[in-house]
Each structure stands twice: as C-alpha cells, then as structure tokens.
Image (cartoon, rainbow, N blue to C red; front, side, top):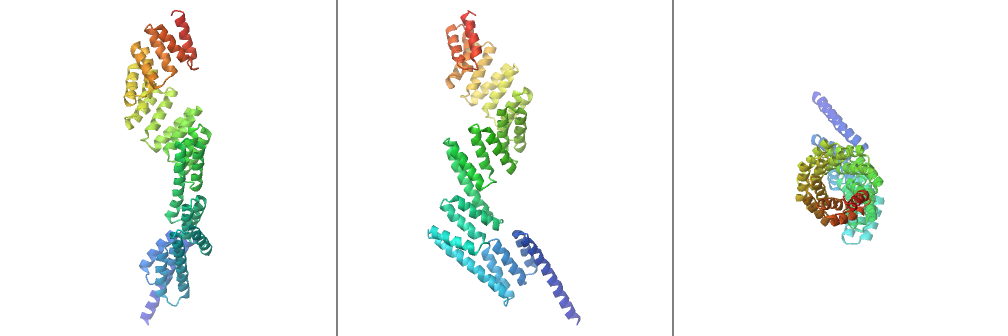
Length: 427
C-alpha cells in the first residue's frame, strides 16, 4: 500500500514539474519570444525526455523558427511517446505538406522558371501566412529580378514573422548595401542628384544602415547643402551615437556656419568616440587657432601628428600658429616638414615666402613664392609676397608685375594697389 502511495506521489510531482516547464515555455511563446521558448524546451527535455507534450510544443516552436527538419523530428518523437494522439499526427502531416510545397516551389525556381516560381510562392504565402521562410524565398526571387521594392517587402514580412532568423535581416541589408554602392559610383562620377537618390533608397530599405546616412550627408556636404547634411547627420547619430566621422562632419558644418563653439563640441565628441582619429585632432587644432587659443591648437595638432607622422597638413597648420606667434624659425621648420611630405603644398611655399620676407631673406622668399606659383598659378597671396621680395631686391618692374597680378584678387586688391602706388612714387 505504501509503495502505491509513493508511486502516485512521485508521478504527481513529476507531472507538476513537467507542467511548470510547459507553462514557462507557453508564456515565452505568448510573448513571441521563440528563441527563449526554444531554449526552455531544450532544458526541459534534458530532464523530461519521455514527455510527448514537451516534444510536441518543441515541434511547434521549431516551425516558428523555420527549423522545419527539427520540427519534424520532434513531432515524430511526440507520436512515438503517444501514438494514439491524432493532434500530433495531424500536425506532422501539415508540416510534411508545407515542406513538400516549399520543395516543389524551389524546384521551379532552380529550373529558372522565375515567373512561375513567383506565382507558386505567392500562393504558398496565402496558404501559409505564418511561414517566414516562404516570404524569404519569394524575396530572393524578386531580388534576382532586380525588383528590390518587392524583395525588401517580403524580407520584412519574414523578419516580422520570425525576427530571430538573422539571415532575413541581413538579406535586407545586402540590398541596401548594393544600392549604396551604386550611389558611390554616381558620387565618383559627380552625378550627385543620382547618388542622393540611391542613398535615400538604401536608407528606406534599411533605416539602421548608418553608412548610407553618412554617405548621403557627405554628398550634401560636397554640393554645399549644409542644412540637409546637418539634418542627415543628426538622424544618423540618433541611430548610432558612436560615429566619429558624423561628429567630425557636424563640426565642419558648424565651422562653415561660423559657430566655432559648436564645432569644437563636435570635434571633441569625435575624439571621445575614437581617440585615434587624427583628422578630428587636426580640425580641432585649426579651429582653436581661429579663436586664438594657440597653445591648445598646437597641442591638438601635435596629437594629430603623433597619430599620423605623415600628416603634412598638420605640420603646415602648426607652422601657421608659430608664424602668428612670431616664432618664425619654428614656423619655417614646420612648413619645410610639410613640404618634405607633400611637395605640392602650395600653401606651405606661400607661407615660407611670407616668413622669409619678414626675416628679410628676400632671395629665399622669392624662391618660395615662385615654387608656390608653379603649383597654383594666379595665386594672389604668392604674387603679393613675390612683389614684396622683388621690391626689396630692387627689381621694380618685376615687383610691379607681381603686384598687378595680386590685384586681380579682390581680397588682395587694396594692399597690392597701395604697393603699386608706392613704387610709382619712387618708394
């Protein structure tokens, strides 16, 4: 008698434990958390591997996760444990029908009869509206047909039905990447309107594709549409705030607006995200120079060089700061360092000519300004410095010619005319 009582007690406790697992699994299913439900199922069958209800619900979960072969295995196991259960048998029959229908549609696709395959999958999508794999396969055919709108539409349905299968989301991203690459081609061709259209299409397909946002902003920046560029960059950072390039470009835009304080904030944000971002240090340094914070400017520019020893522009910028501080030998050293790295740096040659004129080394100034003009013809600042050195060397005609050429630039017209007038007066 005692043995019978113990047996029923154990059976009762066993049933309670199984039921608690089943309730937990069903709760996860009700929340549409299929992966969690599947994990709970796998834990449960380790402890209760002879319970038909567990295997049946496991099959149901596997179908939702598009693991059709696994689902069939679990249904077979459930039937083995309870072979009189018609519900289990009916579920397996429905699953086998689904698998057969998908196989037949796939054969049509593999044979190259794409339009027929589309019709078959469209019918299957009506017959099995909760089967993500059908919509995914339909999307693949539309992609091959270059019908990206319908491809993405069906991929999105697949994601909505089964958000736990990564390849569905990646299929959408792959199309977005393809469209963005087409935008890159148009960008290089300077077909900016077409590039903008491509990037917008890419974003519409995959709204979390930050690369497309940045490239769209870059295109607007290129055509000097800074307001649209700013709007896109703000959206991009709302998707992912850890994007140093977007922060830096925002700084560049605010700099063009004349809002240096805002520009500094974004350059510093870029550096916080990526402390090895040499271009952000360069932009920070040149912006600090604009507000006469020379020490901080040099520190930022030196950091840019620490990160990139071949950063020619940074040497030129440091030379400019030292020139403003009247530390002319340090300025010359940095201008020459820039030229060693980039012998096409016309700005460094121009600035060297200016420093040499300040030091009354007129032959060196003349040589530097001519090297600048060999790189950038009609560059008014270099012609002005050439005029200064030629005047000091007693070459009046050459000086007048240089100042006349500098005068063609409205920014240098007043200074150049003054020097011309002085020369004509004999000074």
